[in-house]
Amino acid sequence: MTEARTVLVTGGNRGIGYAIAEEFLARGYRVAVTARSGSGPEGSLTVRADVTDAASVDAAFTEIEAAYGPVEVLVANAGITRDTLLMRMSEDDFDSVIDTNLGGSFRVVKRASKGMLKARYGRIVLISSVVGLYGGPGQVNYSSSKAGLVGMARSITRELGGRGITANVVAPGFIETDMTAELPEDTQKQYKASIPAGRFASPSEVAKVVAWIGGEDSGYISGAVIPVDGGLGMGH
Ligand code: NDP
Image (cartoon, rainbow, N blue to C red):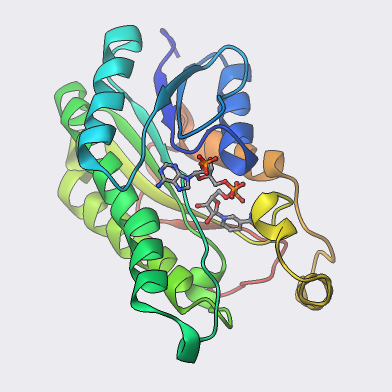
């Protein structure tokens, strides 16, 4: 890298997003994170944004561009779960998860693509999940939103692949964050038993893969789904 590139990680104040921001910082990038509360790791620029709101996303990009120039590497990481069985899932449970995980990724990708097209360079990384393609009981909303990201990355690849822009999906399995801490203990045990690696992963194990696929050396990989799941979802 001749000059440090600018990275944006959405939801960089905790969990996987925080670890991704730390990893890019350690590799010498200029790193901005969005957060609704709290802040990203030391050395990053934290901007307030809610990915369900296009105006808020636009304002965050404008702030980052003023400080660091256009976003060249975008990691759409912000996401939520609202798990419940299909029969009990409300319209709002469904819509809010789709609007945050899928709609939120659309909003940030769309806004970032402007600068990437101009620069004829871009790395888009969408954080999906093993359950996007594996499925998960109680996760009709979440798995639909995460499967949608695969179609999104592949359509972006077909639209923008000729302009130096790649779009890939990283599909983590079970990672030790607030999101999985919420799972009941016996569910965690059951999942551990079905993961060939026999354990959950740390956020930094995901972050290193994201930093690589979002880096300089991955320019001929696009539309791929990269699992980081200890072998749980084999067959993506
Ligand atoms: P956390 O629950 O720890 O963090 C979620 C992040 O998303 C927070 O920074 C949160 O911000 C942000 N966020 C949520 N909603 C919005 C919104 N509307 N606008 C802006 N930011 C928002 O999750 P993880 O770190 O575990 O997960 C990160 C990503 O990885 C998610 O997309 C998740 O689906 C995915 N994933 C996680 C796995 C796991 O095992 N943990 C496995 C597979 C995928 P705030 O702090 O303000 O709420």
